[in-house]
Image 1 (tube, rainbow, N blue to C red):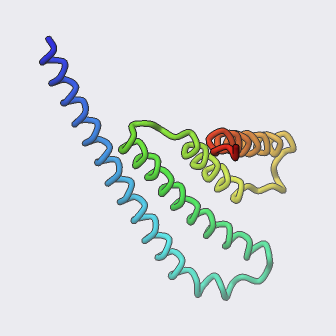
Image 2: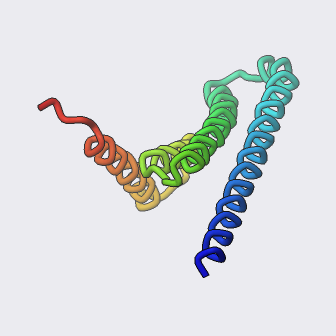
Image 3: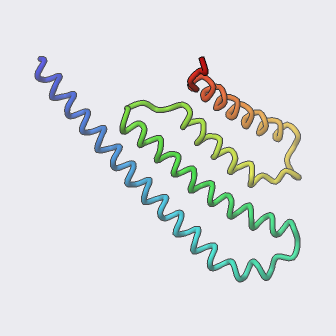
Length: 148
């Protein structure tokens, strides 16, 4: 009975490790593909877009698209950090999860068309942003070493 538990524990451990490694490799491939695609889009559109931008709103739309792509890559890197921490300590750090959520929400906030949103929708977005950043602050404040 004890031998069976040890064998089962070893199989489970190696299964979890294999899945984590596979997830990390997949995430690395996705991030690399995103970076390559962002560079291709940037380099192919730069000449066309620069000459066609005549107004500030057009410039803002181009910049928003570029920022959104960069934030998507940062989001992938934060997810890799989450996997790496879990791989080492088998714990998920709340601080990292909140950072991923803040980046994801920030990416969507950048793309919002504020002029056509209702006040209640804007209040909802503001509540989500405040909740996430407040939670992040509290987690950081609690985990910070005291000066005593």
